[in-house]
Length: 89
Image (tube, rainbow, N blue to C red):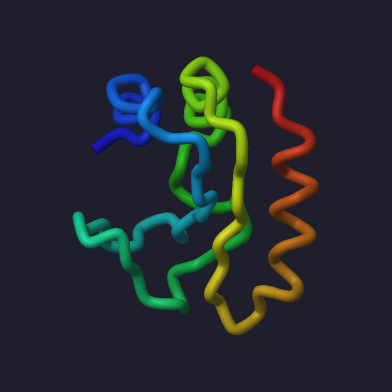
């Protein structure tokens, strides 16, 4: 499901959100889990982050947690932060 649409429909039920991106072409399933090697820095994968963050702000989500299980998460997290800080919508 499109995460922005999901937040638009149910977002008022939540105050926090995990922020995670998956490499382009990675298989998507409905479990919420993915292999660690599919984790990429936020903004480098397949999620439409401007739409998701816009929907989250409209829904009143207050807290965002970067979730990155990649082996190189230490390098990816600063890239994710810079990307999120640069978002304009």
